[in-house]
Image (cartoon, rainbow, N blue to C red; front, top):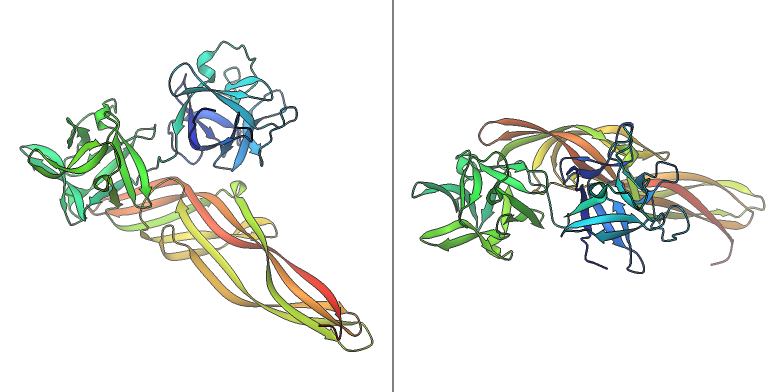
Length: 466
């Protein structure tokens, strides 16, 4: 079995579009080659080896389900199977052979059960570019079934506006012999020399523009200068791969020479940025900070149909006894006290960044009678990604018929579970330069812990037993 990344995206070789899950509209739930961006909540897939190490299962990270071909004439390949299925003779089978293509980094997706290639649909105006296995194995449209694999293992999305820090100094534009180099020499995040704007190219790489020079970063020959006017993103010297190190740390690898930028001293330059490190050294670890004065988060829209409930467990909340010393059956009432705990957090599934306190106004999803509903709102200051925990004492009353000369042990059981709900939202920032910026995002994840249901368990004992 060849090496494949644990997390990947698929790009169609013919059109250059990325495969994505469609969460809305007429084609909701299908996979389509239609995304211009490699890194979105809908384009990420997990590659899971089968038990024998021969084939692969492909899981859509958005809805946490495995890909398989449908049983109808369309043969759409969609994520609808909850658990891997490795029986080739039954439907659905989730095994695919991911076979190497004619060039490095290219692959074919082959449905093991149907013995056909998975490729984009080109014969339907209703279902254009949808992933399907409807075509014959000997179909000649080579490029329509060939895909490029994008390694998502460490790729992340950077905040739109940020500053980089290493050795307790911010990276700032610095003129040296009339050229705008970048040097770790500043201490004030409000200094316009340290502010940078991120431009996502589409394939996961970024271009970085310094606020003061209004120019993009460029490698020359390995020193990084903020002097490029190139608007096409064709110059690989201006492209960088962000690699996640920690929650608030990244490394940047220059696409042209494949090396990481690092704080470097040489040629009379001290602590300048240079793309020369083959590995991620301490000098190549860049702490990221967002140069904002204030942030507001609003317009939360939860996609409850795509919620994921998992890690269910049954817990004993309280135990009491009802004792009947009479000679007749009696209905008795017991009070059971327990601690009710709820947790909630809002975070991004893609964008790296430190927790920033923001003014937030959002509905809070609850699971009521098996349905997810937004019953009340939260408004106030909140640190993005922080878990809020609420605990309160609750008393439940329960009536139980107790036979004569019997003590009835009553146990209150609760089924608890975690729940992830994707959402979109609007972010409004006041930048250090006084600009107000509004950005819409669709990478939000609400994480909560809920009590799904309560059950009472009754167990009778003889009156004088232990």
